[in-house]
Every structure is written in C-alpha cells, then in structure tokens.
Image (cartoon, rainbow, N blue to C red; front, side, top):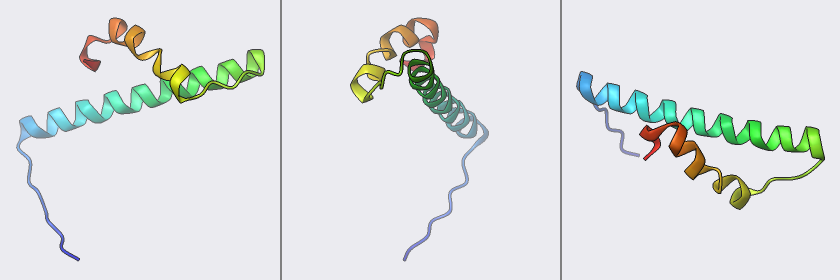
Length: 65
C-alpha cells in the first residue's frame, strides 16, 4: 500500500475547507428535508426527489454552482 502526504498551501486549504463545508451543508439540508417529510407526512423522500431541491438551494447559496 502506497501512502502519499500532501502539503496544501493556505489558499488550497481554504478552498478545501469551503468545499467540505458546502458538502456538509447540502447533506444536512437533505437529511432535514427527508426527516421533516417523514415526521409531518409519513412520506419517504428518495434520492431523485431530494435532488430536485438542488436548483432551489443554488438560488439560496450561489457558491453551490
């Protein structure tokens, strides 16, 4: 097994941190959407239903583009 170690610059660290933050935000929004749908309507929301929300979230958070 090969292991590589990277040493990103400050700018690269910032970009990686922002990217991970957007991934976390998207995951949490999707989870909240599914949880609320189940608690309020006993309705399952699948991948494709939650994927339809992404364009709306992009209006809210343009950095998702």
